[in-house]
Image 1 (spheres, helix red, strand yellow):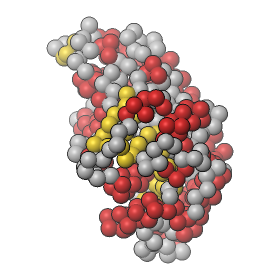
Image 2 (cartoon, rainbow, N blue to C red):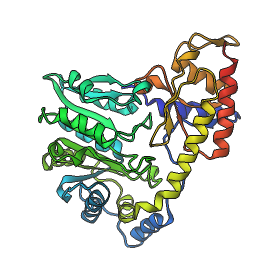
Image 3 (spheres, helix red, strand yellow):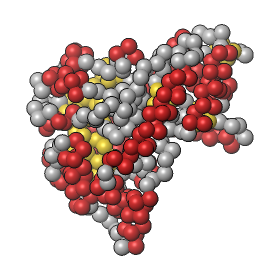
Image 4 (tube, helix red, strand yellow):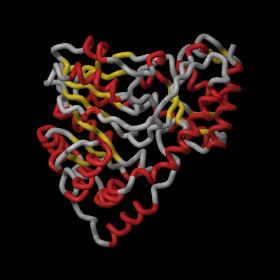
Length: 387
């Protein structure tokens, strides 16, 4: 298993900061907003009410009821409470599903670029990752035809995200229907739809793959509270799935970790019951930051961008700089460029190699506009030194 590239870059930037370097960290996918006070108040109330004991493995019943309500309200999806499993972050939710379904020799289709942990989780399950490439010219989204061409008699699972980490791309309802038209032909294939960035979406509306009744039972919908509600440290994610898959995930989780923190669960009830309209200011801030970063990147010769419609990342093509050098440092690939920008520009980003696209780098804009403005100046200065 490889170390997470995002965590590795965060560690390297902390080492430079410890040396007294003024590093700007744009590597982690973590909102810079604070958890809303009403959610923290719910956690405090839970502690005062002594909700500090073991909980049912799939989560408190009232939390699963709140998640069921959220699915209906926001996604028009009907998941009963016995179809919902709450875990220690959406990452564990994904791992539970993969470990429950995938074994040696099973193939798992993953559109590239992909989130770094998908591949490693499949490797742990002894499955075989099958990457389907979607370049920047296709807005980093695959088509139904590409998906079907990758299916074999060994295909067990598909994993994808919308809005996507690392690209910010968002699949439209029509694009999801195109994928569904293929998947309905293969009822034995399960699809993990990672929707953790659901609310950080600059299109008119988020669309869930499970909305299509003809494939709903094949879909496992993944979500959580970390991104939209700025609750990364609370570690709480959840799935909506068929009863069989939910039961398998509960069994898996029962042997690994049991339920997530009782305090986090009670706080998450407040988040699930809250009106998503409360997030409008945060979403507007992210959109403004996106425009700032894109405008700065588009002024740099050789950088190629698309317009990400969600999450808080840009994923520019920087292959123009490969083969160039400065002061004895030669940039041969995205990993070299990421390290060059860290050492020369003191900005931490992540290589696109980690996400399955060696032509790109990932820049998180989950930082203040002042910080992003300075970071973009540093990146531009560093890149313009290469020749």
